[in-house]
Length: 56
Image 1 (cartoon, rainbow, N blue to C red):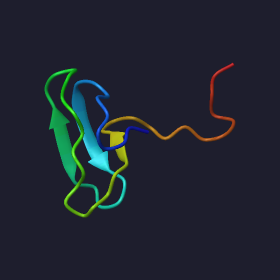
Image 2: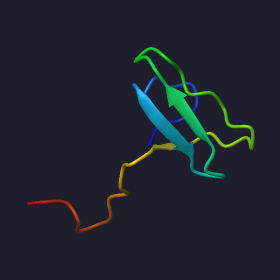
Image 3: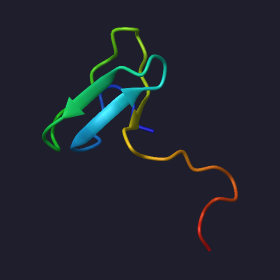
């Protein structure tokens, strides 16, 4: 899961605390800290992998 200050690549990222979105347009763009002070983000459209759900 990307954190503030990282460059996770192009895409839209949602704060795991409040759901606010940040869109990074370049691979060199940096995730900023969310207004709610959240620091962890999830790429929009990515599913959370649960134990046992990985393909074999």
